Length: 160
Image (cartoon, rainbow, N blue to C red; front, top):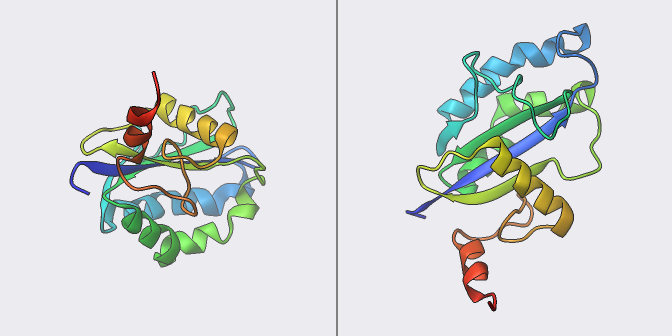
């Protein structure tokens, strides 16, 4: 995949304020789960503030949304972490305790040039594109993915 890495954004809407007792287990797991991602094979980068997470970074104009954005060497590396890391799976099995059910897409993937660090605005654009058009080479999901460079191939092949 030489020239590309996989960018990933996922958002969730808290059921309560982050300092509420019902979110204590999630808040306690945040740093350890982020550390697992940071150490995972194929991990490249993660959006974070000086606190080491992205919980205070606004997304889509909704104060109750929490954002997680990262870059991975490959789709396979991200899948391995998401679906096979025991620490990540443990907290994700409890997500309904912490977050509201979202009817619209809340996770989006896209290919970026190796070394690129996506912005929140870029990620929001990809997520909104996925919501409007479904999975395309420009914005896709773990279930419906496209190879690196596919979005550029579509752009080049469009008539002027």
